[in-house]
Length: 144
Ligand code: AMP
Ligand code: ZN
Image (cartoon, rainbow, N blue to C red; front, side, top):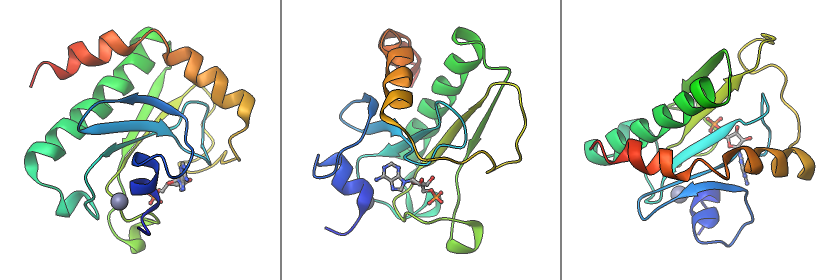
């Protein structure tokens, strides 16, 4: 199995998991552009937004929206980018559909600026931030 994100789903590769259920998984981007940069994926493999069935697409975007709202409302981020890349010409590097949720804490560094390697300490901090938010996520998802 060559797909990196499928391997993360199967626990063949390590990741910092913020949330998961039977359909979706949320984990930390290993090269975050800001503290808390998340990747939201369906567990099933689809190459991009344009290969993903509507029901799964809707749930994955709803989940991304919920996470973004928690950053804005619960954690005080003044802005959030929620984005997906479709095709290598658009910068897609991993061909398993994913949505980037990128909280902005105040200083605009350009869209992909501020990228750095995720440290263990930063990862632990972000997991801490999310440790009490599972109920809010589940509640939001119950809307569909
Ligand atoms: P994209 O350019 O939209 O395909 O984004 C792929 C993202 O996946 C990039 O932001 C990478 O930093 C991230 N990424 C690649 N491999 C891993 C990994 N093993 N764990 C976490 N994030 C990863
Ligand atoms: Zn995959």
